[in-house]
Length: 236
Ligand SMILES: Nc1nc2c(c(=O)[nH]1)N[C@H]1C(S)=C(S)[C@@H](COP(=O)(O)O)O[C@H]1N2
Ligand SMILES: [Mo]
Image (cartoon, rainbow, N blue to C red; front, side):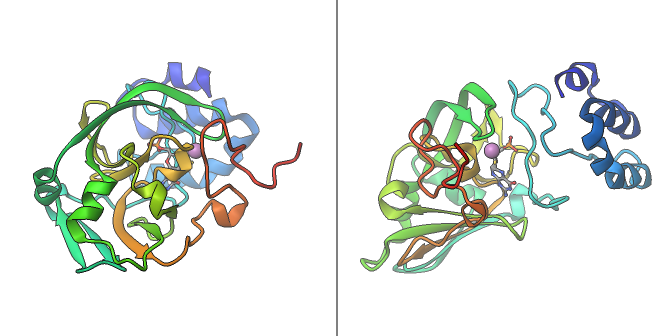
């Protein structure tokens, strides 16, 4: 992967990027055969490969469990907060900007081993958003839903009330890009990257933790960096 990334020129035609990607991936390149087809058909439409390092990001890799996600225009995007709340409410970008803003600089650590040091994040601290809607006394957990249609995540209410959990609108000193899960993504600073759900569309207050996408596949719900091995069924 590293060779492929240093060779990759920004703005290079997609076809060439994919060929380089296949070289870099070796045997795994077979798996991207389908994206070569799509790449050719879609000409210069952006195609990201899973695990591809995103240029100019300090080493973030592109992750998505679905093939492609339709971009949301920030002006049209809303994050809905519902479930066990005083009143269901949806927040546009201007609504989020009107809430108290929190800035945070933290490392980003994926459970597979890659890490990006000292990433700048900004947005609304989740406890501030929860206060804005009013959480019912029956709520014990928070569920996050991605508008990619598949990915979900959750936190206990106690974890969700931490000030280092952000509903992020900025990352790396700029609005969160589509590739990184913009216009709005989650950033759960003390936990592994899979908790930081991309393309945030909905937040739901629940009575119990509802396992997220990776938790249903064996990863820890409490994904504290350093204190969790990520997988609760990891072979020793
Ligand atoms: N919707 C969605 N969010 C997601 C993922 C995903 O596949 N889909 N992958 C997670 C994982 S495992 C990591 S490490 C980070 C990667 O963020 P990035 O794609 O901005 O590098 O996103 C997390 N959030
Ligand atoms: Mo990850």
